[in-house]
Image: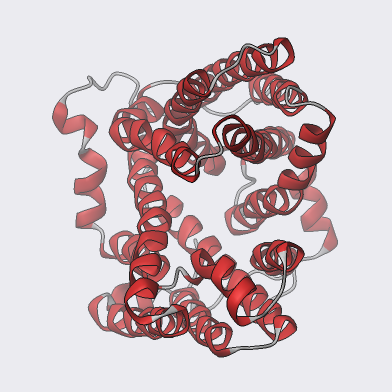
Length: 407
């Protein structure tokens, strides 16, 4: 991997459209992570029900799944900056509502679920628009590096966002929602300041064919179909992180602190790999490197599965996060570069749906397999399945394996 000079890094950060985009996404990701912690704590505090706690994810996922293709079309028809801003102002208003109800003491669980559903709607529209905006704000020839920076934002939010949300909730239940409101408004203003070319395709009518054009485009492009489906099945089978509570208590014999460290380990590994990829770009055999990263992810999953040492398990989880980041950066850049600008919103919607489904269904698959065979065999089978998928996909999608450069 050739080294990227410090001047190239400064050029990326100094590129005003990308800096504004990066800062806006940072605010949005932190807001989302703070909200996830606050909602979870508050719902459980109000109901004491694990079922209601589980319903939070379902309430948010349903509108996302229903609206994702409409949202993808909106990202291709309208100014993506304005789509993101519309979502962020709605999110700010919703967070302010939750803050008001929490401070005043009248907020109930039904109102929280309604607010979560609104967040699901805004996420469905915001994610494809923001993803499709990245290639237009990145400097020429620096999309891979820009993708790594953008991915690092998510990982940093995953590590520190929950801690910030928990600290804010300890002050008062309404405080994290107030912080969310501020972050959303900052993201709104930063996106409004971005100057980027307006995408073509604004005259497309919202027909059924246009709404689902992203699916057809993905099916006709083996490299895109292969990379998206590889991520879907690899995460679907390798979802060992869903079993962390079982590993923490019954196998590694640790307490809540250990569970927290285990949950943060993949994000730490991912953030460290992001730092590497921002200095060293992958300029040769990128398709093969993506498959190799997925295989490493599977091997690390198996190592984690059979480990009885918490420190060895932490290292394995960190390697999983690092390998996943390599695969993710290559996949996102490859999909963006292989998609014409007028289709990026709808293709991004397909990718977003696949990623969400893989995480949701991956946790379900891991839970069912663990219930049938036990946690260790379930995690081992998941790692083996991930390796098998990578090897099979290398044969099914030779054009993806043979991709040499991201250009």
